[in-house]
Length: 149
Image (cartoon, rainbow, N blue to C red; front, side):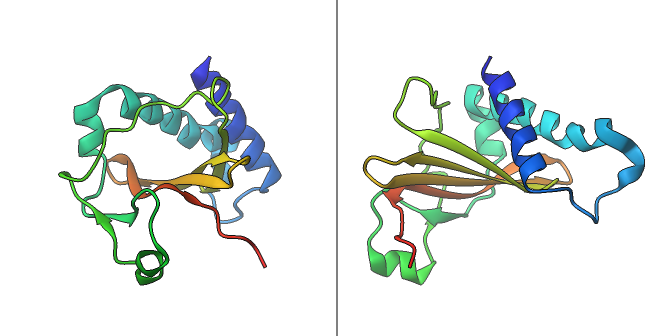
């Protein structure tokens, strides 16, 4: 069911964001869904296989630690290393107070936001499809969401 939910969210997100005009349209609907099916398989394995997870992170990984201070956020210099990384486990939005938002920026880039609206907190992960498959390319731990102006 988790895979179905992920695919449904990706499909809704891609429909609401419109289609990528630069994408190859000769493959039709099946070709457009394929990157997201590959991502769903990657996403499941990423959370179940710790060795695979470590292989699919581009260290040193840009991002932010949990509860980062404003100076660190402004510097943009924080990098996760294999020594500082904590393995990621799947989050079930149905049994937690987090809401998941998957944003397919392109067929090769997906942003995942896990938001806790009651306390204005968020975790952000960015995944990119490279030559050898999907990889985690950015991770910001649990931090306050900046207030929009």
